[in-house]
Amino acid sequence: MSMTHTHADTHAADAHAADAARCTTDSGTGLLVVRPDAEIMSKQSLPYFLGVSAASTGAKGISMNLVVIPPAGRAEPHSHRGYETAIYMMKGELDVRHGPGLVHSTIVKAGDFIFLPADLPHQPVNLSDQEPALAIVARNDPNEQESVELFR
Image (cartoon, rainbow, N blue to C red; front, side, top):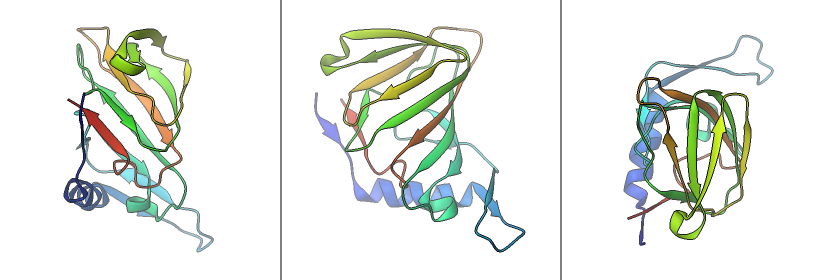
């Protein structure tokens, strides 16, 4: 498998991401509320709704987004270079293929918390052909899409 990643893709995604969410605050204390206006297509070929990131809030050490995996959908096989990922499954059931060559398989469902160490190749696959799967994804990378490395 080879990896593809360009900074042009990253900067275009960051600019699009900033346009897809409104960030508001009322108190001047630094507390920010992000309300996504539109879904964005990720490098992994999954729709997501921008939450907290460097682009939306100026975050320096974290990102958190809502990811939607359409019925019978799957992400492109990928890893997150140098960054850990925590996921909370809100709805649905996935087969998460992972490890070198994606030879391991773990079934996760609504209510599960998942931890992915940095650089772990993985590919979530929605097991339903009727319903989307929804997950909150947090990463210790404020530039959420910048560390994504696709395997082709």
